[in-house]
Length: 90
Image 1 (cartoon, one colour):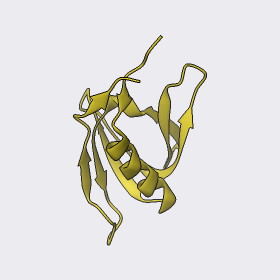
Image 2 (cartoon, one colour):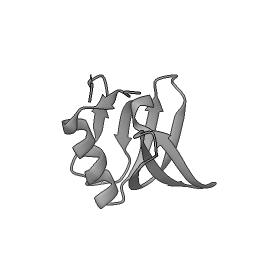
Image 3 (cartoon, rainbow, N blue to C red):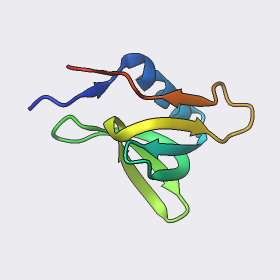
């Protein structure tokens, strides 16, 4: 089964956020929010990708295709916000 993927350019922003352990606020497509420190990108057996966040209540995985917007809360970060309107098929 084919899953939608985020564009490579948007994927790069998530990789940078993880590399620098940025504190981020994620706004999901359902308009809920999650805040935490970006730690890693994980892939499951069905090839779905998740951002691993360290939150106040522990680790949380957020599926990348559920992202609407990523806001960086870390001062002096290399970027401040990314909008995830772009998707591509594998």
